[in-house]
Each structure stands twice: as structure tokens, then as C-alpha cells.
Length: 533
Image 1: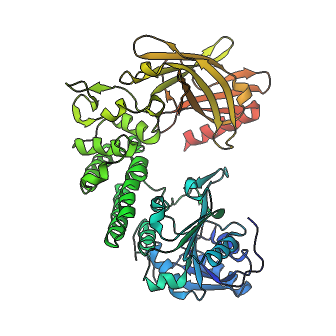
Image 2 (image 1 turned 45 degrees about the vertical axis):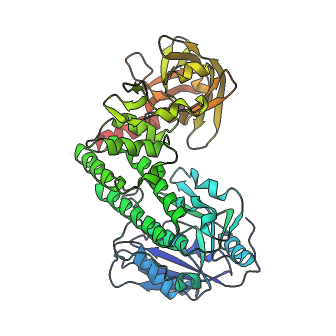
């Protein structure tokens, strides 16, 4: 991203914060560092009780571009302080920044230059989620920002409903005022959903840029989790569903039927899947409340909402939930939600031989799976690590699925380990898949733990069929007395290795490795500290 030093002051950055003295200085400075294009930074303190306001006052004394607004009372949300900022800005363009995030260098320049060149009322760029303290970055809605694009109206790209963030965008201030576009006031969670729907409903001319324009800091170990991470209570799910409902109604009532339909599909593809895969972490009371509320919400969908993608993971989850008044099949639902390339057995048929979700739930038909190509089926693979005298062996088992796998004739599986923090991979090549009894195929390959090295490694597989097609998937972690467990193994390269195979929240096999005496000691100390708490 190259900065445009010729830009004239034209942008107001609204920074909101509440009791965030540890991070708000970095956020404001990242906005000021954007250069002369930023006319002002409007910092809105939501009546903090820590040192946040004092820090902002000090920043304003050091740089005349900083204007501080202190609310008389805490709003309980993010919408009201952002609205205060909208009311206060004096620049032609405005963007938003949360107190615990940052703007990367050049973000404002590229957004502003695009807005002027393309005469766009809204310009949106790539946001990256940065996991802290590891620093691992994950692009948000990367598909939308693969290439630059200019849209006369949002309906040109229905997938825009998936990017509900307000912070990775530059808005023409007059556009927001003309259409009275504001955030929900008060203690309203997921206010971005509603604000973004109001923006799209107004039909702005939009431009999309592939540049990184926002860094979203994800602090999972923070004492106070962000709204998007604090999902343990049922109120969070109810709030998310309500925000999704309002977004849909805003789009529908504005005549944007295609975007409204896309918003409903997005709820199934994203929200429903995200919360369903965490159901196993919740208690029975939460699960029952979640199930009941979700059934009520999905009951608002009409026939047209179910016509496309009948085997898509979110739609299949929704159909199972609607068909059963009580929570059921949670492990199977969790894996489908987290790993849509895998539908675990059992595979049932109804009295007519049609594939169904379960024998006692025949109304949830899986008949479309009979016509999908094998390389698009959600195939189930189990994986286990077993110790051997000369090392460690990975054993894989591929399950039959309604006769489709046998018809496609699986021939091999390619094994890859991916480092979760660094993204680097280590491939082991192809291993032959052979029949292993009724409805099973198996493969076995050695795993060089020493070559992998320290870190967390996720297993990825690519199945190959006789016709040359392939299917990428993950593997379900099997457990048992003879399988490899946590332990220390000798290593010529590292002296020792601490090995811990485990199942992720979605049930997939992963591997943690610590190398050398120092690494092993560090892991053991951390585990001891957790046990003593």
C-alpha cells in the first residue's frame, strides 16, 4: 500500500472507547499517523471510569487534530458513541475505529483516493483479524476483496451482506446524513449488522479495494471479552439473532429483496454454524434455550429461503433443528458446522431407500447427495496416531456414503500438516487407500515428528478418486487405549519432543509439539500453573 502524500485533509476518524486505557492511545496514534488526509480524530469516551479520558485529553493537548467528547453516562454499547461521533465530524468523509484496534499505514489514503477517483459514497477494504499475542492474521471476507471493484449499487454483489463490519469502510458524510443512517442507540449488541444494512438499503455507489485498511485485534485471553467473542451466554445468541432479523427487515422494506434473501442465507451459513459448533461446550440449560430460540427464529423463514443449496451445511443444520423439538445429534451437528466437508455416520435411509439425516428423522432428506459428484460430498475420514518401535504412524479410515464412495473408487490420500500460527505446511505425499472391510477404506503413513518441529499442527487431507478428481477435507480424531497420547519422546535433532495429539472443538485431529528441554519445561510449567489455580 503506497501512501498518497498529496491528499488534502478530508477525513474524520471516529474512535470510540470505554475503560480501555491500555489500548486507546495506540488506536488514536494509528489514526493520526495516516498523515495529512486526516483532518481530525474525534475520540468519544463512553464515560470511562479508568484513565481513558485523561489519556485522550493528553493526546488532544499534543495534537490539535484530536477532539475529545466525553459522554455524561455510559451507553452500554458501541452505537451511541459512534452516533455522537457522526454528529461531531466536520470532514467530507468519515470512518470508524475501535479503541483496541489500529489502522495500518496508508489505509486512509487508499480509501480516500478511491472514493474521489470512483465518485463512491462508500469505499470498503480488507480487514485482517490479528490474534494476540501470537500475531497470526486471518483476512476477513477475503473473497470480497480479491480484486478492485466498483458497484453502481450493492445488489451487484449480494455477498456484501457478509461483511457486516463498519470499521473497514470510508463513508461520505453527506450520504449518511441524507439517508439518516445511524447506529442503534444504547445497549444494542451487533450494532454493525443494523448499520451496515441501513447503508446497503440506501443503495450507495460502492468501491472495493484489496488493500489492508483495518487491523482487528482479537484478544481471547482478555479479562473482558469483546461482544463477538463473549458467546457463552444465551443473551449473546438472542442479540445476534435480533440484529440479523432487523438487518433482514431493513433490506426487505427498502425493496432490496435480493440482499434481504442473501442476509437470511448468511445467517445460516455463518451465525448458525458458528454457534452450533460450540454447543458441546455449553450446559444443558443453555443448549435447550438455544435450540428453542433458534427454532422460533428459523420458523420465520419462508419456502423461498430453502430452495437453494439444500445440502449446504447451514441449511442442513437448520432443517435438523426445525424437525426436532429437543436438542439432538450434537456431535454430528458440531462437526458438520465446523467442517462442512465432513458429514459423519451413521448414514440412514427411509423406507423407500432415500438417504435421510436419521432413521427417526426421515423428513430431513439427503436425496440431493445422490446426484452430487463424489468430490463434492461431505466425506467422513477418521484419523489416529499410533506409536511404533521406529516412530509414529498415522492411520486413516474413509467411510462409505450411500454407495457414492465405492462408485467413485478412492485410490489415494495426500497428507499435509499445517502450522496453525505460521501457516507453513509440510506435505507427506500420497498414500494408497485400500478396502478395509465393509464400507471402509484405510491408509497408513509414518509421521516424522522431529521434522515438524514446535507449534500446533492441523491435519489436512486431499482424497483422490479414479477419475482424477480430488476432495480436500479434515479428519475426525479417534481415541483409544493404544493410540498415541501426551508424552515425551527422544529426538536426535531436538534431544526430546513433547507430543500432544488432541481433538479440536470441531473434533478434528491436531498435534501440539514442544521441542528441546527448554520447550518441554515451559509447557510443563504452564500446565502446572493452570492446575494450581
